Image (cartoon, rainbow, N blue to C red; front, side, top):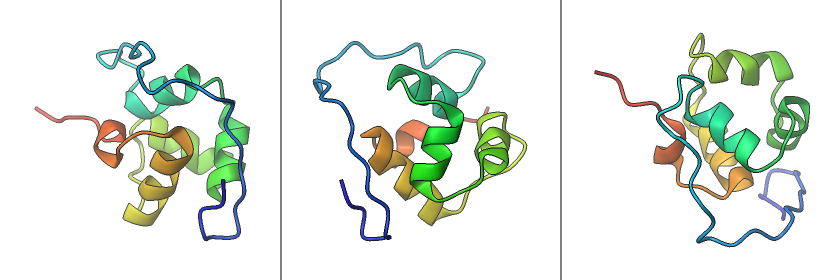
Length: 89
């Protein structure tokens, strides 16, 4: 896949109807989707064009990513952007 950002990535085929991961996990949706897709933190970060430290901080809720970063991560993970944003009470 080419995201028009000079980033090229190929996902192994996975059906859109695959079982959903446990999105209620305390790990947060970004980490859950990354693990569900079988990607390491470093692989996802490199593909999205961000540092592994930034991705780690986004996964733990210490930092919020920009809209552009969330869009790229959503494309790489083949999910909607809304799927990556934790709901706040």
